[in-house]
Image (cartoon, rainbow, N blue to C red):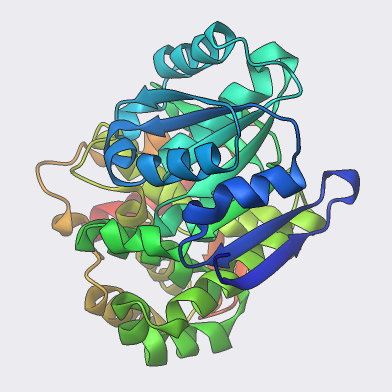
Length: 369
């Protein structure tokens, strides 16, 4: 049996679930699933990259446990988060004659986790699903909390549903197949948890960054701490009516940059978040809310981790400030046209600020371009 190094419980009453974190969990997924969800069939949704690297391990495990399964393989990349491919996933579920009581497995990074969870939420008017995240970003953030969805030409993640998984199975060994760029992009979401309200965690990351990137014990500990943090927030505010919005630190700027770059490899999600967190801290400092030296400390840590920190780090030409502001105006936190940003008073001191002056944001963007 694989070694489960950490278990994080998400206490949501009758929708509670566990996050299992450890090495080689995919190889024992069949045993785990047969014990927890007996007499089910499984529909695996993945992408063509993960299908080569990780899907054979999962299939072998399910076969060894005598579990019936079907596979739906979609193209890799952010552009897959669209109506066309969520439709393809749902039709694949129906074509396989999977029933409402069967389970969907999301095997992949954040794109597949978001899309497969959304497909599960609408197939047969709602099916249960399991997250098996294979990227660092997905293991620490997107696989936990039940946010599912796809992108729209109007903006990122504007179509979707809250649909909690029944289990999250985070196999640390899958991270060894990530490129350095993909791992660094996921690490931006790790740093985010320290910047929100856990200054001690940020300092711990500064001290343990090398071991996390090298795959030592600190990697599993960092992932567990991030999951525990997110679990606490989700339990308090599942539908993002209040404090859960803090988890979007850096995302308002980041999502606008992703839209401007066409959800392409020019800018990965975590890279957009890294730049967005720097912009959020810099804007807060410009407003006199946060010390400017904190921004410098954050920039230094992100750069050491191989992440972009400025708009000029993005390849190609960005759209105008007006174009970026139009994307920001479509952010999910906008309320009756008023801009809401996650700002900060320093490292570990993020807060929700409503009615942010768009003119001030535009002036700041012009200043840092």
